[in-house]
Picture (cartoon, helix red, strand yellow):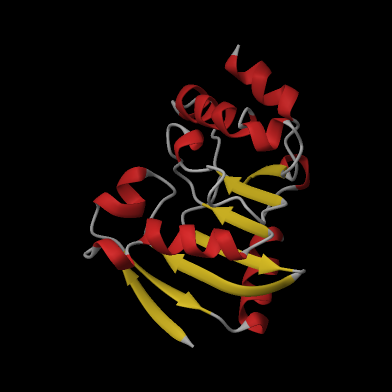
Length: 170
């Protein structure tokens, strides 16, 4: 099935739908070139009940403002208590050609929902801006979508070590 998500209503905006899907998931793949300033406001205990794995794919272009703004955002992610205490495993990958925004949700290794959207993983994208997205639930289509995105990541940026992110901050 396919359903439309938009930010025109409080009960069906991207943030509400993502929160609901997080609660059902044990693994998520978040693909977004722009990120929220502080992940601690997003990743709270309420939505991370079953979550075991987060894979974030974003951009981090050299010699750009990303080197300042995005690195600070990534620090808030890796310093989140559930990630720092290793209750949730977190992997960060870089794809500097990324423009699309996709959120994939899995349970027991099976993809059950994906949102392809104009909404970045930011406060503006998730509920303030007028954004539209399509949610799909066909696991075969979602698996192909995941594979195509993972194949776009250059090997050297497939799993950015957390110490490297701290070095970038310095």
